[in-house]
Length: 478
Image 1: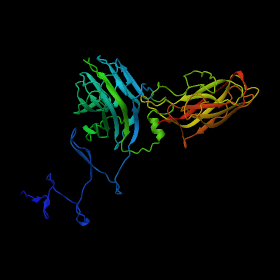
Image 2 (image 1 turned 180 degrees about the vertical axis):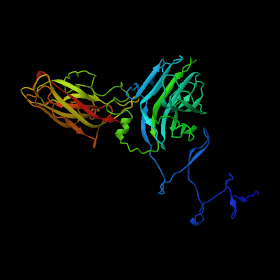
Image 3 (image 1 turned 180 degrees about the horizontal axis):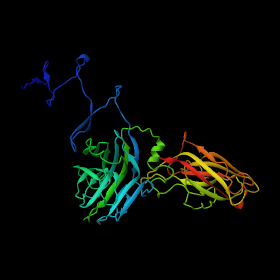
């Protein structure tokens, strides 16, 4: 039996409604009369993409609202001009990949050829744990509206050439011009259509969220699609729970015009898990350890260590670097004792600019080994006194502080001395220098210099004697 509730806008003793005919309700103030209100969180409002979705908040057995902290795992901005081969695996045929205009551009050469492809993967993989999500974020766009026979994929997964991916979860703009969300479990794919239309040369925020039982596909903070893996079917959206970042563009057949995939940024985040990783560990995991040259310069190792090759002998100088690397192998012909500070190593941290992601170098320690070569030490002992020079604005150790020229002298830290006595034979090893800054790291700013300084107050110039060794400078970029 239907019952009509009569009321007004402001009538005592009756139910009242507002101007939009919503019933006015106040929760009882007396606890004995109170009912229950369940708190939920709105995941998506349903105005676009999937239907409105809310999820309940979670409370611990001790009545505490459960909360979690995300952990950044990877972050890159492609504003520079050098492909970083230390961090990414670049594979291509006919298509080219280049950094230009603040973006990584797939098919930079505008190939129309059938079978042309360009694939970028991180060497690193990222793991997804049960009950914890994994986010893959991209700020990217396209140079043209969908082009028939051109395919673009970006997310996490394994793919090679133009073949179907073997595992992963990713966005796909397919050969028919349809934008899809794809979950690929060991080659078997499930997809959903994402009703999103992009504007050419305009960046959008694409986000793949991978959980153990589902994959979600977000664009500009709206969920456009999701794939649910029902219990008892596949082990999850993907077979592997550890996937590399994946960005791929290819032509499945000849195209009538060229398409470029333009990636400005890419990131991976571990969701809902406070991993308690140290900041140096996070930076190293993002490819910013001292063993690699940072983004913006030609990729390679940071130390002077050529495969199966003796190091070139350094020319010792106060104003020029004997080696321009961040440590490594070194050697020089024995020189006379003097109070001269020699810039045995002088390495410039790449400078910051609009098209260069300036990174500061955080130094955590130094280790130095030295030994005698060719002939025994003669006439006098050899003393090697070591120091660091940090933050100089030029390679010369004579650089001075200036309030007008903007220059800065190196800030020096004494490290200790090594000793080779008279008669030390060929192969005699001096005491090692090992200094740890982990409790109080030193910072060298982008654009300034790291110097490993050598002074030899006692030594004998001997043209046939060679002092040789290694130097490791530990740290990370941020």
